[in-house]
Length: 72
Image (cartoon, rainbow, N blue to C red; front, top):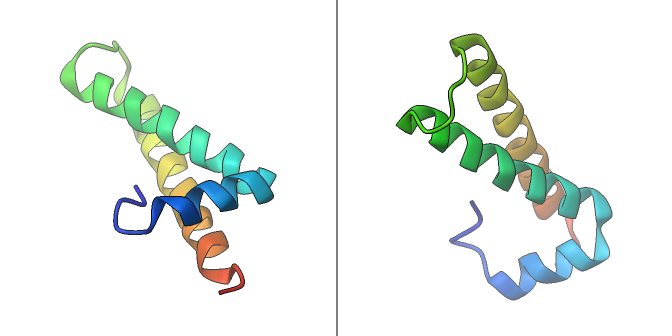
C-alpha cells in the first residue's frame, strides 16, 4: 500500500503511532481477504465483500491522513 514511500518511514511510524500500526495491519488483513474472496478461495457473499472493501478503503484513507500529518 505504501510501496512508493520509504519503508524506514513506515516502520518508524508503526513504532511511534499505535493507531497507524493497528490500521496498517487491519488494511493488510482485509487486502488478503478481499483478494482471496475475488479469487474464489474465500467463500463470501457480495454484501460482506462490499463491506470489507469499504472498510479497507476507510483504513487506507486514515493511514494516508496519519502519514501526511506526521512531522517531516
